[in-house]
Amino acid sequence: MAKKVSDKKEDKEKLRLKIKSYDHKLIDNSCRQIIEVVERQGGELVGPVPLPTEFRRYTVNRSTFVHKNAREQFEMRVHKRLIDIVNPNQKIIDSLTNLNLPAGVDVEIKMM
Image (cartoon, rainbow, N blue to C red; front, side):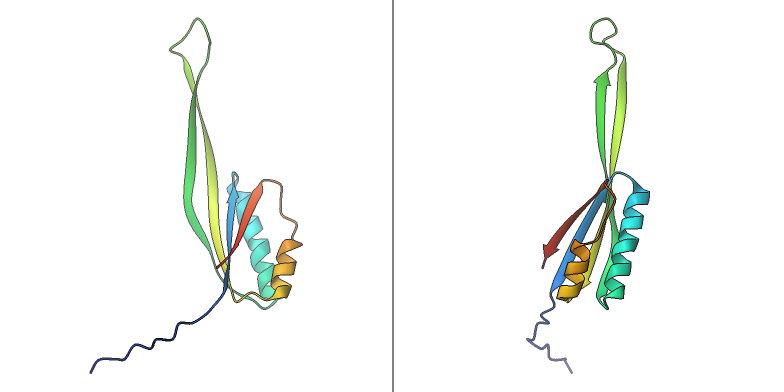
């Protein structure tokens, strides 16, 4: 016997936080702070999910005139995490906006 698939779609709102930082310790501490705030307010969350680290590599000439073949290479790593908050209430949103995060952490908030 085949099971009947219901046409009901669960309408769950999600608040998606995408966190970026150059330092992996800062991003882990920030994620821990966000998780503590959401759990204190009684919210349900998924994550933090580590996204692939983005590498930005730059090659620069050491000298401008004499030694053209001498080059230096630099690299910046951008660490990313993803946190989903399921069915956020107004208290959770207010506490997240009042959260004091370190200077090297960028947070993007998107309602889904």
